[in-house]
Amino acid sequence: MSVRPGIDQPRAVLFDRDGTLVVDVPYNGDPAAVRPMPAATEALERVRAVGTPVGVVSNQSGIARGLLDAAQVSAVNARVEELLGPFAVWRWCPHGADDGCACRKPAPGMVLDAAAALDVPPADVAVIGDIAADVGAADAAGARAVLVPTGRTRREEVDDARARGRLAGDLLDAVELLGFRA
Picture (cartoon, rainbow, N blue to C red):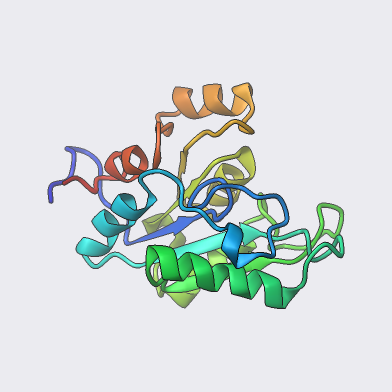
């Protein structure tokens, strides 16, 4: 595995869950509905192959809205691991957009907490996600960010990521952008 000139691989990679690692099923509390995104398995294998820990940081506001509970989120997370392999750290925020917490993306709380749990400085962490909140959390934490757009990613988010050199076509492109090459 080689690194592109001028780009150092991060020491940890954190992924958004819904719309990034797995197909976004709004407020999913059903493990049977979990489907990996294209290239998720191969992207994770590339990162894990060099011993880099991977984790998940995910907003789960369905809890605050009363649409699902913590046990359902944990069951869905367990299914993600069954399909995509183990993650070194899981952090998820149960709060709603108006709760003012420090963990809900784009706030940096989950990224900082995951980095601390992995004993990696935030500057040596990368966050891969599908919307501006994921990129914003990385920026606020001092981590690197890569945007992998989906149908719900806004055009201005894509344009900003492109202008800043952190736009990827899929998860495999994202990890290659971070220096994890075959």
